[in-house]
Length: 403
Image (cartoon, rainbow, N blue to C red; front, side, top):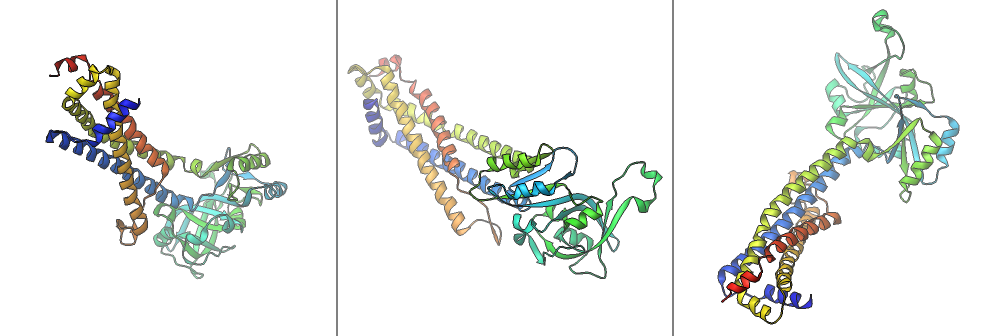
């Protein structure tokens, strides 16, 4: 291994007597650098977009959330709450009651979700970053709505003279046609105290209200909720806390983390990430044909030297290993330089934000070590395959034709 490596390094540094071979070698190295840099930049850009996209849903999704295993609601007893407060690693929790409602204001209407929350909600979720204008003041008559809802209904904050009307269907049995309209739904006038803004879809979705008010409107008792949001301590193990919460709440609930809550979004983003990687890998495969061509040209250029080494006792396998190692060195060094160039560009974007989506928003990117490993492994494996194929060109027939 030492002799083939030494000769391969010499071949890598030395120039050929034929200018065409030097041009081909330089072009091959340049293509590897550009290809690896492009793959790393694309993966880093996609990682930034993924983080940016998930930041919107993370504003409304806790680290862990308990939802009913079946149905839409479940009950939590006072003794269970005492046990939850005693769980090590659990920083806080907040109960909520969510249901679809009908909103009406001055002839304009909209269907949204009423989310009744308790006073602990502010300690679990980052509501300060969500608030667009007004105050986060929630009580029996005041609510916080999304900016999309406020715009569609033409309602502003603190409209006590013209409150927003909230209608919710009453739970019950029997045919709807046999009941009067007034008995089908509960109604409550509310005033918007503040408006939140997260993302267009979410801004049209929620009206945050007091938990007790929501329970009364939906005709639920004080123990019934649709979910419990949990905030974990920074050093806490999600697996351990999850087991302890499940032991307290029992099999009637299902615990989900952010990824499980937004499983569809995560699957979509992961699919797009894989597709993007495969497309650019295909480009690299085409580019690495240049490696095969460059190695074959080097074999032909060094044909006399190769025959001399063979006459001195070097085996065919050792001769093939020389050019195989040379191909690995070219792809590895080129890939390393390409990753360094890509890292420099990603760092400059993170620092200076020179590429903009809007005048105030820089294109999101993220530097992740896993992408460094993916790019280098891809370049190394593809380079090894190309080098193996090209080095197989060294055989007895080639040596016999050498002058």
